[in-house]
Image 1 (cartoon, helix red, strand yellow):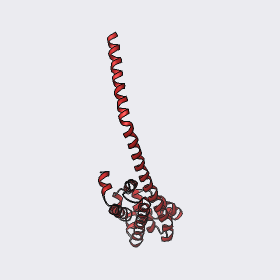
Image 2 (spheres, rainbow, N blue to C red):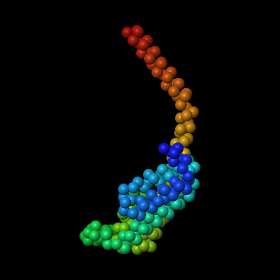
Image 3 (cartoon, rainbow, N blue to C red):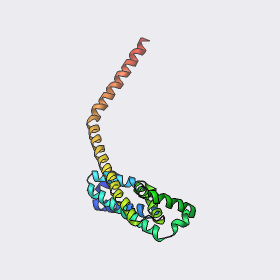
Image 4 (cartoon, rainbow, N blue to C red):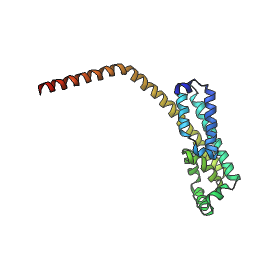
Length: 194
């Protein structure tokens, strides 16, 4: 599967993942989509040269932040939050987000399902758009960069391990074979003495 994906045009792969992340972070259906694993996979492909690693990190950070901005605006322009959450819970949420809104928005960027919901909740709770943006955008870029670079590094590490195992494979196989023959010989010898 990796070889198939590695043969696809880099621009196509990046565009598909960008749309995926925009939907994952901006639309409610994103609750059901894996975001972090998708970005790690993109990083893995970037490590294999399919896409430029820094470009992938910047594009994914931008679309993730953009999706969260869309979610925030949807949460502000509709009353679905109050209708779904209820007045009492909404008052507690507003109180909590009022005191810890920035931290909640920043941390939510790193957690899949929460990344989709918190922008709407923050907007419904009255967190200002400027405060939301200042907490969301830098973390979106840091999150995407960390995952893309981690995916690229893990891909490079896999290839190094694969190369080392390839070089050591035959000698290791011979050593295991010799060890099995010696153990069999020793068991036969011990059985013959008994």
